[in-house]
Image (tube, rainbow, N blue to C red; front, side, top):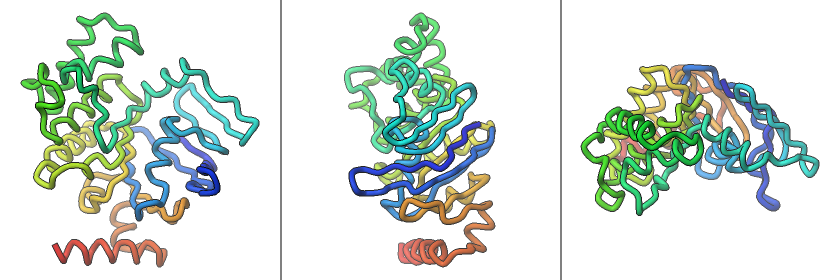
Length: 254
């Protein structure tokens, strides 16, 4: 489905990604876990070309992007827009347009990127809002929605574009605890439907439940990966064991 090879990314002198390679097969769910600052979100943003890798290769369907440091030719805005419509991204802080209704936010990409007629776009938008349990909030603006509802609108917006892969970046970390379950329920249902997803998360129980594969990252490197049982119950690296032990202690304290 999507393949990244030997991805490097630095911001100034800070090397954030150090040769990451990852294959995401169609219909699978991969969770990226690891300490803050390990490069998880940057990897996701590189997969969507919101950040341009310094070095590496990204492949998805008919697209192949090669990056060779200063010699790389950046994709045009048109190509980037088309590519991103196939790599739906949902952010930690929703990024909804405050002056638009929930439905308006969901259909904006269909109208402006895909050139779809508004009546057709609205039909798709309403179906996606129903899919995330918000059919009755289509006419509401973001200011009248809870954080969990805003995040579900953001998910509906990404789904409306019929992406090949859905990229989810800490989508529950900005929510009050009582709102998290509604958002995670949507992701569970998408996983059951066979949506290809890459999820950056600190929700360890959720990662164990929903993932086909869990990838542990630290200091810009992919330390180890495996099935949820392999990684959570039988981690092979000391760094992974230390990270999981901290989360186990934190969970017990709560």
